[in-house]
Amino acid sequence: MSYSEKVLPILRSARKILLPKWGIAPIFRHKSASGADVVTKLDIEVESRVAKSLQRLYPDIKFVGEERGGKRGGEKFWLMDPIDGTGHFVRGMPFCTTMLALVENGHVVFSAIYDFLNDGMYWAECGKGAFRNNKCLKVSGRPLKEAYVAVESRLETKKSQEMANRLEKETVSFHSVSCGWEFAMIAEGKLDGRISFDPWGYDWDFAPGSLLVSEAGGVVANIGSRKYDYRNTNLIATNQVIFRELTSGRNAIFPLRKR
Image 1: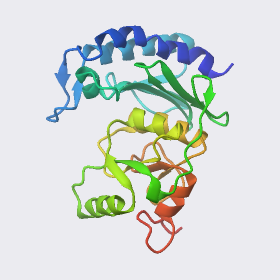
Image 2: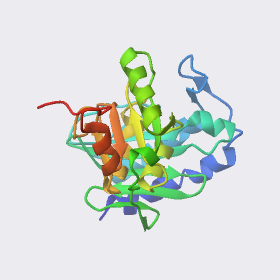
Image 3: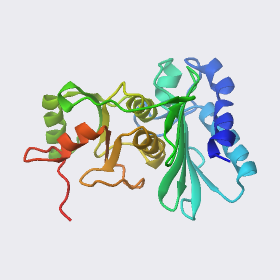
């Protein structure tokens, strides 16, 4: 049996908890000095409920969540972000999702990004394609000059600032809104790419979307490489055309490292 048959209903159950509180949920605590890095009690509740349900179904698979933590490692483990974009959630903005990935032997083999506001379940299973509910997804075929690309970077180094400036000249780039929403839009062909260098995010922010985009015919690779390691948060997620433009030729913004 596919993971999707058992796991997606569990994620969908979060909607009845989250939807009534969208835009009115109080902030429970701040994780850092950043005003956007917040936690609500709903983050904790949803993560706990999903973790318990997964534990009942798959007692041998470990669980790692943004709020409760957990130990990575072993043959398989789940990675979860209960509300990606909590800051948007409390303000009543639509850029918030629930994300889950299954990592097996270092590779993401199943993932889901749930747009609970619109009941849009984006999911992928390794080798089986990417879907929004039951609709098959495919990334865009646009070139870089016509692309909309989200960029996540602290811009604290000269190199990262130079990369950002070059991207602004080559395409329509904008500061990242939220990982889950952007990965879903790339897989659906509405957004054309997402680039993270020196980002704020963690593995639970990127692992779910990595499989979704690659199974939708896109490319997800760590910067300087053709491969993706979920532990490395510097990455490019885009279509085949743009990946070639970004990484090939004399003027490549993100040239591939020589082997």
